[in-house]
Each structure stands twice: as C-alpha cells, then as structure tokens.
Image 1 (cartoon, rainbow, N blue to C red):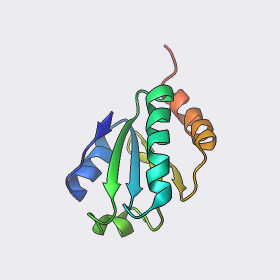
Image 2 (image 1 turned 135 degrees about the vertical axis):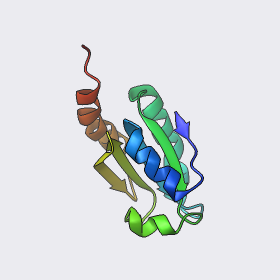
Image 3 (image 1 turned 30 degrees about the horizontal axis):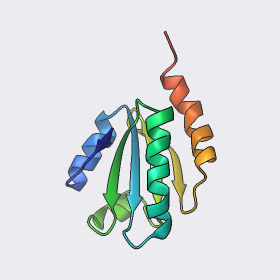
Image 4 (image 1 turned 90 degrees about the horizontal axis):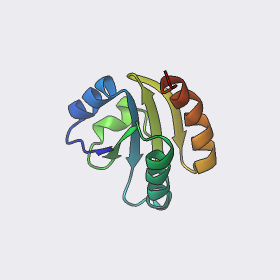
Length: 112
C-alpha cells in the first residue's frame, strides 16, 4: 500500500509503527527517480505485498535530508519493525532489490 505523509513527524511515526516500510526519497528533477518508481511499485506489489511504501519529495521536506542522510536520489530505505535494514541509492537494480529485500522479508513472513 502506498501511504502519503504530510510532515516529517508523520514520516517518523510511520517508520516507528509500520512493520514493513519502504521510504522512497526522490526529487522531481531526477530522471532515475522517475524511471525507477513504477518498477519498484510493481516489485513491492507482486513480491512483497505486506510492505507499505511512502514517497518523500526531498524538495518539499529539506529538513529530512540530514535526518535520514538522503543526499542522493533516488534513495530507498527499507525498515522492518522500525529498524533500518537496507539502503539503496542512485542506480538501483530491481533484481538486486528483490534478492536483498527477499531475504529479510521472508524471515518476517514465514508461514506458520
């Protein structure tokens, strides 16, 4: 599910309370941000259905740049139970994302 955030405080609350969260930092002038976004959405929807996503426009929330060390775009940060586990930036391979996220995601979502 794609979640909208309207403030830095709301983003921090999401990080703290959402079990599986992808925070996607982008900038409108960033071509890789634009081309990667639909691919990441499709990957999450098909392979990681229990993961939520939130998009953060770095230009809209400049105070988050230093807090989350978001100095290059796109920046994808994956949180599981409020802890940062993975971080990818700039040119991201979808197959690398799937493999890296899958290891952790599958541990959290093993069948009972």
